[in-house]
Image (cartoon, rainbow, N blue to C red; front, side, top):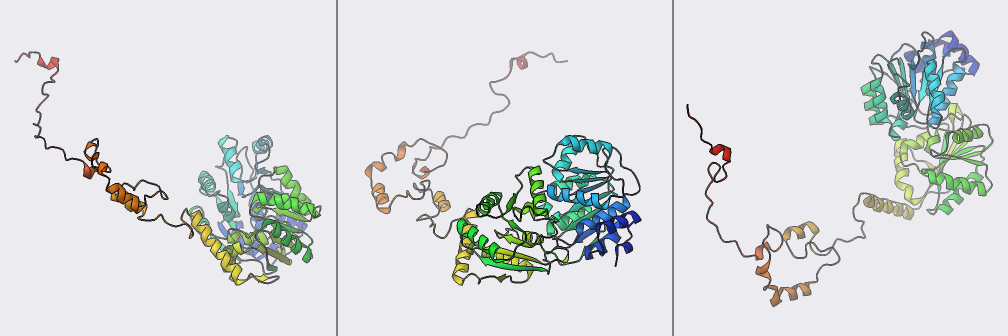
Length: 491
């Protein structure tokens, strides 16, 4: 099937031919004909299969008729990160070159003034991150009651980054009659509930099972020591063993990205760094340098794991095993795109056994090891570490922490013993308790305790003498106000 059979307009088909697209991918082949008709779409496909064009091409076709008004955009595309938003804006510039559409990119790290000027002129397409979009709305610079098409891209990444409350708020500000397109590589239950609330009888298009990797990617595991220096050395050895054209190295924490970047620089690698705390211009400059081959390696956090279209990445190295299994799919999806072959390797320490098993359960397959798997002793050690670490995270005791001797705290407090409020480790030994119980001075103070209500020692206090019942007072007694004592004339 060709793009001419999908219901696109002649202008869009001309742009597609100029961009070098020949045949549509499976997600494009199924999603574009439905989206062109104005129906809602829930698209699920593995990363690197052309989801961006699946919503960009039908949007361009539908927006050919009509004109945007000041501060009232006609369509809205929500992206989880600035890099993804900028990448989609570039796609619209390429595919919409024959259209006279205005595209406004609303992302953080950029001046508000330039964005305000584009909105004031009227934007046909707004591509934004949720936070910056709501900033413009609250400042009164943006009206959302003219939106005809809403696209939520990488919706599972929105969930991971905590954007779901913002997405719900934005959807409630949009017209009820809009068209909504949801695209994602995975479909967790939270995203499914969101889609059920804001999509109207959508066409569910699933061209691959959720959370699956492309078959063109070779996946491997490499054993690594626990200490950071040894782990970095294992990574360098792996990078030298394979024939690498360029590669992205993923870390779980931004701090580790900086440490790994400086270490690879010292060892002569052409490397750049990318994480969320960097300035936006610096982030874009680093991505451009990686795209054009100025740097061969990119140490990055998960900000580069979702949707970035760098067509020819030969290798992916996971320096850390991702905490969430779905992130593994997105990381290795940066290679092997559009039918190309790719290679993904991951360093695994004994402490990563639990996370590794979660990834293999999600993939329904075991990943091969490069130089032999972890030994049984190392796996047992890793599982023991996970169990102990899990108890400490929950605030419980580890196996090495013993309970206080004697009764537990709650039972001792209920028993009313004199040692109930003493901290653990300062309990009175049995011999000392016996000596104190036989002390003759102990009974001398028994009846001199100040009376109180309840508390410890209440059983040793003398009982109060019974008192005569008080007579019930009638009326005001002796406290009658003077004005009520005045004589009253009776008619």
